[in-house]
Image (cartoon, rainbow, N blue to C red; front, side, top):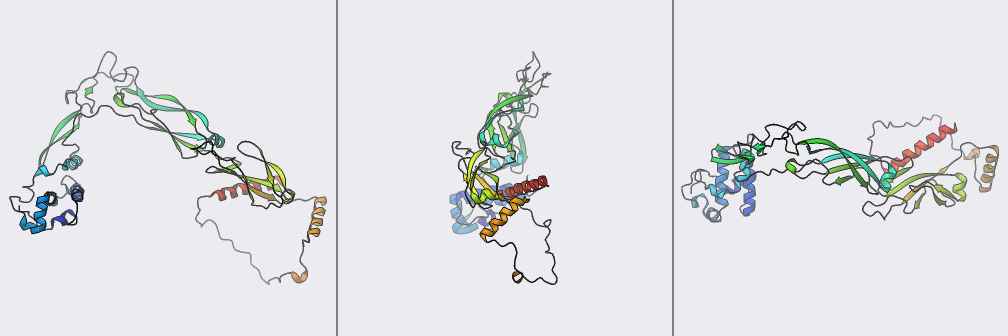
Length: 411
């Protein structure tokens, strides 16, 4: 067997000499797709012939053994390049040919039943609906079988007739000539588009398409604990399939609105709670908003701004275990009074005296004043890269907004 190449056969396939049969087959199929002459981008007929000849040797255990022991001299016979290659050795080439010829050398009648398309719907929920779950009704428009023609596409009194081109099969055989010889492929019938039948007088209701788009209402049970970005699947609620095929599904994409008081982080709820100076110093009991309404919370004496108090199981239910709930975290903000009456000022001064708090420094305690001072330069934030807001950023924004609005109202 004489091969018209002096190149190493393993090198042609791009595998090592100890490559397995599966590795050799995989390498051949990958390169064959790339080098096949019908590949307009990278086809190379000479390289493809060389590749096929190398594969015929290395895919056969006996021929591979002879080549490994004696090299090209061990291959004798009437093989001149690709012309002597046994095409029976390339059973897996049918998949490669189908990619380039648009069909396959094997096949039968195409299935006439098609599954319907899936549909996507967006659903907006308010904060509490997402926390506790809710029943919702959504409206979709889906393809359904035309009632006027019962899904046949033919006008009343008429029925679809068998396609004469494919004899009702929906597919035809087509011969394609290549340098490898003639191959038969099976393609969809161009006359009936694979239906196997043709409508000579179409239905006026669906224009012969056998389906019409109709509005439909779907009842949804939204589970407790759902969050933005999650999807709900409603099986068999999408477009009806052609030729009485099964319907597709409906996917509901959920988005949840933000709340003015609560910030959600998974199953945890954060809330800001202002307390007065005296409440924080002495300790107290207050009502704190929660998703279940106002709840009592004890503020310990000496509480500082930034203290976080936990209210157990007042958060969001776990989506997969609704009986398990997260917590509510209360971020305490101690409010310093900005306007004092004469009585309040006198009482605070007395408190300062009792605690030994100094309101002013003695002259000798003051730091020397520099001759020339410059106002600190603040870097512009415009050039800083903005990061995605974290839960702390969100809390800070809420607190800042509340403080600004409170100051405005006091003015």
